[in-house]
Amino acid sequence: MDTEVLEIRDFLARYRPFNRLPHKTLATLAAHVAVTYVRADTPVLAHAAQIDHLYVIRSGAVEVRRSNGDLYNRMGAGHCFGQFALLRGRGVRYPVKAIEDTLLYLIPQRQFHQLCQAHDDFADYMEEDHAGRLHSAVTRPETERFAPLLASTVRSLLRRELVTAAPRITIEEAARIMTAEGVSSLVLLADGRGGSGRIAGLVTDRDLRKRAIARGLSLTTPVKEIMSTDIITCREEAHLFEAMLIMMRHNLHHLPVLRQTRPVGMITVADIVRYAAHGSVYLIGDIFRQSDVAGLATIGDQRRQLFVQMVNEDASSHMIGSTLAFIGTSLSQRLLQLGEAHLGPPPVPYCYLSLGSMARREQMVVSDQDNAIVLDDGFDPATHDAYFERLAAFVSDGLAACGYPYCSGGIMGTTARWRQPLAVWRRAFQDWMAAPEPEALLHCSIFFDLEGIHGALALGENLQDLIRREAPRNRSFLAHMARNALLRNPPLSFFRQFVLERDGQQVDTFDLKERGTAPISDLVRVHALACGSPALNTRERLDEIQATDLLPDGVAPNLLDALEFIAMVRIRHQAHQLEAGHPADNQVPPKRLSAFERRHLRNAFQIVEEAQSFLRYRYTASNGFAPIQKG
Image (cartoon, rainbow, N blue to C red; front, side, top):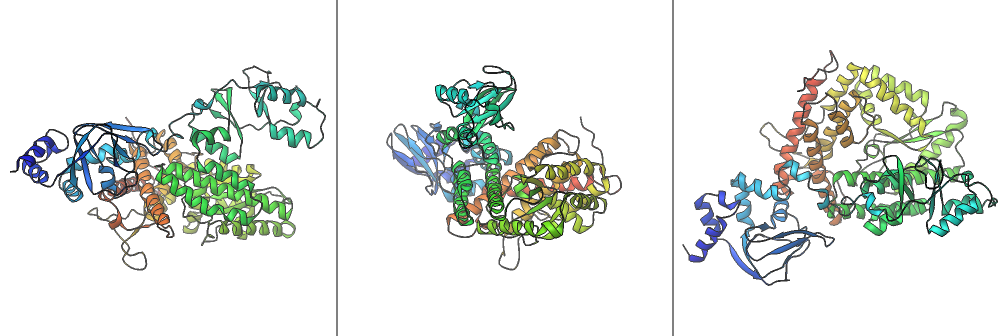
């Protein structure tokens, strides 16, 4: 054997995972290794570069940096890099640079994949270092993902003491305090300036302009006459991403920050934008600045661009789903505002409902419309319905222009059946639960994930309360919902082979929504209904279910990992399609996935199958659910 090959073999044999390979395999591998030298301060791998070797450091050192330039890792002799790009079949995520004169061994891609296929220990080590087993693949430290929004808390933006006053001061005094302190908002405390009690109200520069000066109010008017009283807040330990979503959802420019129950600071949209420069903040602002449907339609392309950006920045499916849902919600809200401006004020109070993935905050870039309208019981069809029919059409047509196709099943406010008074909705919900026929179960799967997003929100909350109160009591209904949740199965055969479409345009693919994420949402919904959970998001539902005895220990975390991994494969597939200039869909061809993705998809699908098997046992037609003995 060549002396250089012997040296390579002996070096590799000192380090994991090569030291666990058979002696003959290691000798064969060493014969394929190339050697290269890189001077200090020289780039080794560029961001997004396509590579065909695994890199092993023989001597010297390299550093790996995140896309924002922050240091990710430093590595020396015996360490490997590049395996993540090889496993995923994607470009390099983080660039690598030599920080010392460095000698590198290059293992060809073919030999790398052969080792992963033939030696589980080798594959596990390579996967664990970056994404690893299913849990590791979806629970990397938050600082590795989408920094700085997840890596930092709201507390990091609090640069000064909160400026406060008492509600009894005059408008002139409020303006003087804000000017002297150099702030754009003033928190009004029930016990006065410098107090530690509850927030009585909030006044901003905008309030002074619109509610005082524009109305010609006297400067001696008490500021409480123009202050906002329904105040949204966040905790100082919340992550910046959470604060951003709160501000997006409620279209806020100022957000008071609490330490426990005491207000301690204020953050603004400008603070978050300066800190993170994240596109979704701008996008939401753009939505509410548009004055017509044509303007809103331009948001469609920006929404797709933001989706691809978040995928490339390694955002989680939860972050992506939440952000896209808030964008969809904001578009709906703005269309409703424009519709009311065009048609005039509504003749009776109403609540516009978002349904399905938008309500669960799990919306993806491929999503059709699901919405409905709950009307006040004073609604008279002959007198009022023409208005709401036109309003519903205006919103649905506008959403279609923004890239949200019409619902093929007609689940939209434009359908008279889904535009009804509260009393009619309540009877419908009660009937569906009392007589769970196939059509009723289908409606429950759609309408039991609902959120009021505009109008008299109490109407939507009334239906949510009804569901939470009645569903846990109706064991036969839960059993039927469980049976219905088993109709969509993961695409896995008895021998753990993928089951693919065999004809039509989608041949040799599987639908990762219909047969991946949707089965998880369906079965988690049943457990959430059984425990009366108010949560809509599947992740939040699992958190609440885990606190009950509905699931054995460990099932909820496993389902969460499975959901995240399946969702991210689906998301990356869609981002790749958009980047290639093709329409995004949910049909994923396994042959285009990396060995890493195929391996862990099988693990995730098996977790879903086991959870479905348990669902079949847990809820029975005879007693509604079987008890679990814990501990």
